[in-house]
Each structure stands twice: as structure tokens, then as C-alpha cells.
Length: 164
Image: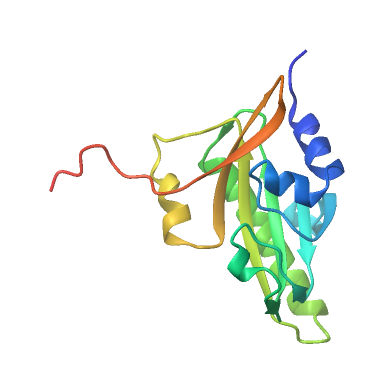
């Protein structure tokens, strides 16, 4: 049986956030799947974390009160994460931003983060440096096997030969 993108989406959607964090996927808030964003498309998975206490891998941040609303877009890929996945997520980012600018009556601060999840990452393109340049772009790979699913966050890519 082939592991499909919809399987990945279903596992993430149906699994408790605490367990997903234990498995390596930084996720919190209320999950919404297949969110239609007007003509900007349909996002695989979006989470919304309202102001309140934050749960983090780093215990020194647990319980820290945050004012901002966090909106996390999860663009899921069955296989390789590439620049096209990033651009697709950028469209969802724009759609959410436009919606909020029209409907944010409470004038709450919000932050949008892009999370790209796939089996592998295209390391032949310069887009792999995005997670080091922008703190709101994250790359995760997944492994699905006998032990279940696990995630690994990726950052810190460099050329093997800098040429300096």
C-alpha cells in the first residue's frame, strides 16, 4: 500500500498535538483541514493558536503568555518538498492575510508561519536556505514505518564547499 498525502493529512489532523510534538512536529492550536481560502486555493492543514499559554519543546517557554494569534499553514507533500510547495504555501499566506485585513474587527496581532512537510527536501535549490533567513518558514520531513510516524525539522543548510 502506498502512503498518500491524504494519509499524512489524516494522521496529523486526527493525532493529538502533544503526541505530534513528541514525534517531532511542532504543532499547536485548533486544526482545520482543507481550508478554502477564496481564490487563493485550499490549504491542506491550518492551525490557529489563540492568545494564552504556549507549550514548547523548550521548557523555559512553557506557560509564557503570548498576545498574538498564531496561524500555521501546513503544506503537505507525499514525496519531495520543492520551491513549488513553498510558492503554493505563499499563496495561502496571502489569502489568509487578505481575509484578516478585511475581517479583523478586534485588531488583534497575528503571525502567520509556513510549515512544509514531506518525505524529502529538494536540496538542489536555493530555497532550502529560507528556514535560516525567515523564522516563520519551517521544513519537516516525515518517516512512516513499523514504529508509526516521526518528523524531523530541517534547517542550517550550507554548501559543502563555500568557496571562501
